[in-house]
Image 1 (cartoon, rainbow, N blue to C red):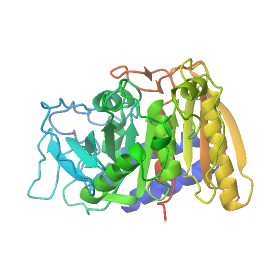
Image 2: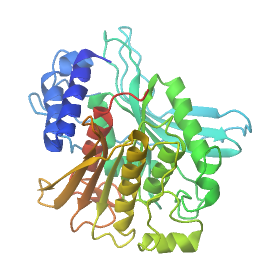
Image 3: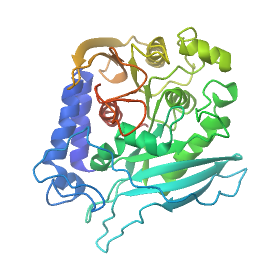
Length: 396
């Protein structure tokens, strides 16, 4: 890890421990504005991105709610051959990589497929640029799980995560559910066979994350998972089933693991009837950040509270001590109110964070209208999730 990014993470961690979440985000912005030459090995922090994207005017500060850089996808390509024992990965770069003689590479937006245990999963992968002359070090990665009826490109456009990841040097992986597996392209979070380690969708998603980690120089100690709605529910499952793989979890408008076992109980849980805090003894949950609108008519807000309650209970069981909670109100730049609660352990480390979004519905807070299910007026969930993830030290 380069020295400036390490300082950034230390400062953000300290601010988060003190409940100064807005200040932690500002620290990231300041580092990006004033230290881009050191972090990314460029001579001017306003150096424009690759020619295929709109340049940022010289001297203009990085805006964390900038538009996602989306590159059109090519036609579909051949299915990967099924392989029952080992994951098989087929990749095709949408924009061919630009490997320069001085070692620099441009950002890449890749289409790929992985087959594992008889399941084939398509995905899109965002690789940030690598500056010339800078040391090659493993980079963090966030796996993003879309909601029902969405796809990888739509989710990337709506969350705007690639724009943030480009400047922070974060790899972003977008698996895509098939209509064959679910007619609405939902992750099957409500079925028992998809709520267990080593089976179903958790197994293939984890195999994909591990495959990308090995092949694209990702830091295995800083692999994170986040999702919206059904994707948020699956992200919570992955955090519970694979805390040895995923270092932290982000859930937006999702449901807690174990809140449903079939379609009927899923509908009940979404209305708020099945939300409960269930912990997995002997397997502590990773640090968890949750966003949920209190006017969500699709997934009741009690589900977000249940996820945080489970994370709190798990942390207290793991440490044998009670967590401290600090709550503060606030509002986004566009005026939408929220209440955020930060839970810290006896050493001041943040283990859980809950954002209740007042008046918000079932949509990604602070997202772009270029994608579906977004609420551009809300707090920037993408920026806050990245801040939460990067503020935590690498998983041992």
